[in-house]
Image (cartoon, rainbow, N blue to C red):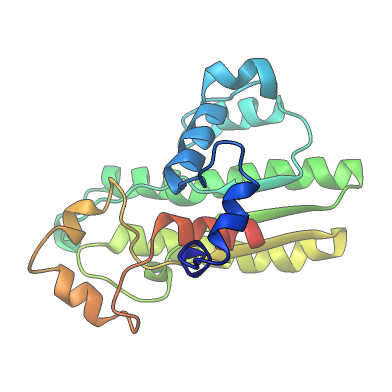
Length: 215
């Protein structure tokens, strides 16, 4: 999105003159800063870091309520398990539903209660997936969890809007991450994935981050 600026011989010197280190930041720099701020080491400057298994309803409920009022929140927890429908166990199905959907339901409800009680505006962004709109083979539980996330977004947006609480979702396709790289590195699957993308490329993590920040 910005490379046309950095590759411009007239503009680049001006940009660099405003950077004490004489160089521009990379995406990796931002990711490292974000990871640090999520770690316990950052507690000294940010207050506190909360680590909890969001698939556990009661522990999550207790932990999040201790934070107080949350003005901005992103539901981004998600796991993927691929298996034929006829072989899918109820345990695996519930694991994905608990992590991908029920955690968002649980935390969004807590956040909404806090904002309404405080009379403050707020925003919630749910990270969903096109799998909630389009079926994918061997992904029944994942697709169902994202379809549930989409409807959670629509209903909560309708109900919380009058309190000046915005609820939106981003629905990317597959993003190259540790969880999905086995698909993108598969020579048989990758051409199929690319054939479904008009731009001929898959989205990057930064694309989702930018959309989420905008919302």
